[in-house]
Amino acid sequence: MTPFFSSPESLARLDAEARSWLNTPFAARQAAKGAGVDCVHLLAEIYKVCGLFPSPAGAGEDGRRLGEGGGIAIPCYTLDGGRHTDVSQVIKWLTISPHFWPVPVLVPLAGDTLCFRQKRAAHHVGLLIPSPAGAGEGNIQFIHAAERYGVTINDLADPMWRRALVAVFRPVCPSPAGAGEGGRRPDEGSQGETNS
Image (spheres, one colour):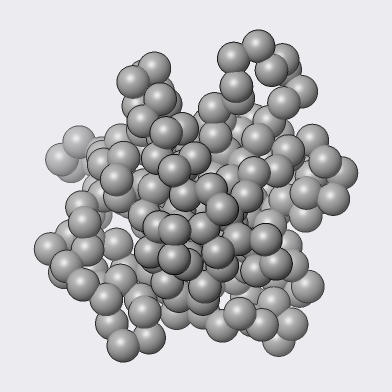
């Protein structure tokens, strides 16, 4: 599968769109730049603007985006879900999506979705962004919406984040017709949790 963010132009657009969300406060199940967003909706909005999937037609009563017209349907989740279940709705959602492919956590690329364990399950996501020019090998930054800080950038080399990383999913270009049911990859029997 070809990574969706593989050209210099697509990476520049990803970086610009991601950074345009910086300092947006955290707001559960919202997606309004400058006003409020949560971690899942942040990624969905960035990917949408970058062209990974079509714009959703609207939002449901609980704030989820509708899948009308090929848009993305964001899984229903609760903010304290990590305290009550080992099942990650986010990883289940990414695993069945034709837009993402699980990759080993040791080889993330700019544009990848990073899934972090909080409490009992992986309920937090971030987006790996291109490293600033001249930043060096060890500088692996990701953007995410944190309850306490809003949209911020952290370094994946930080031991706290590295330990919490449990899965990485790569956005991929659409499969050619006939590549499988609905263009999806064959079932690998994994939820993408490939932490070593």
